[in-house]
Image (tube, rainbow over all chains, first blue to last red; front, side, top):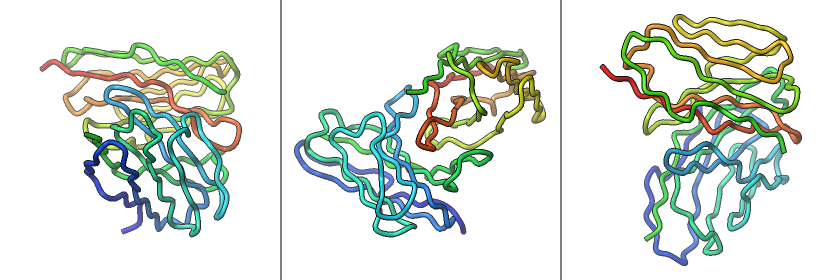
Length: 114
Length: 110
């Protein structure tokens, strides 16, 4: 099946620990994105990448880090510096040029920090 | 950065009734996309509008792009329980990324 796979779907972590969320796509898309969604809220962009070995900060990058070593993979690390990390995290991908194209989302990862 | 405002934030609809949600921008848009997110799910693309005044229909859903390309609307007729979810508009921002509106959360009363 073609698509975007996020893992794990549910994750619990203790406060102060780093955690890495996985995102893999087999759609051959150049661009990948990470969004954060808080309950009842919209989607806020954390980081995005247009090409391998390159990425840019989104609107709420503080406390997060990413890497893009392979075209199909874009893992997100939620560091201990993120003050309120409990949220729903959505990974997405698209062709490099969004004009006339859409983005496709994975099923998301629920992170709860206790 | 590019921002879009969606109203209303919540929409409680009686089953069978119609409703409209709106997406507004202070700047002219090149295009606008609409997504639907079911409760507990992920956003799924519905449609893209590109031309000024464009109207597109998907069964009971009618999407419109304003003449000035600064606003858009989604109108749902004869609402069904399957319409429950959050509807987001999204616009392409500088840097080839999508910025999403805050969404309209639709609840349907049977």
